[in-house]
Length: 167
Image (cartoon, rainbow, N blue to C red):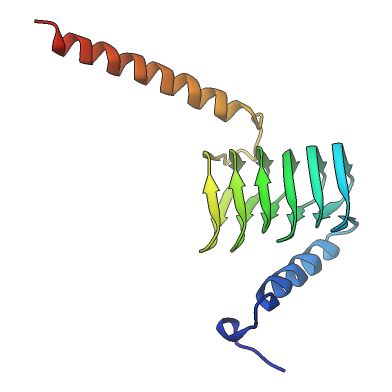
């Protein structure tokens, strides 16, 4: 049976995306898979690429790529070469290459990457830092910088408002 992209039954498009990601990751070497029924708390370290179908809470460090499948639920900081998010993710992402938010994926947090791709239907709440140097900063740094900048701007705004109100 052959489907055009728009005619694919529910779930078929997601599975096709997963298969493409799996092929791309396996071409680059070893892939570690966290299964759909798995729940990990702590640090996950992979010498190759990593695919997460289950739940992870903590930190993720991979020498290769990280792919979060549509059923995944991850609350962590990720450091990797490239990241694809098709599930639910909360935390910071620091990649040397591309961060990809797939259709149906959700990111709540900051992304530091060389390239950011957000597909239609993806939800991104956070700050994106386009780092041409390959993600040399810290994943948590952008949030702190943002807060400091907002605080200064709020103080300046308050001071200006007070100056206008006082005769």
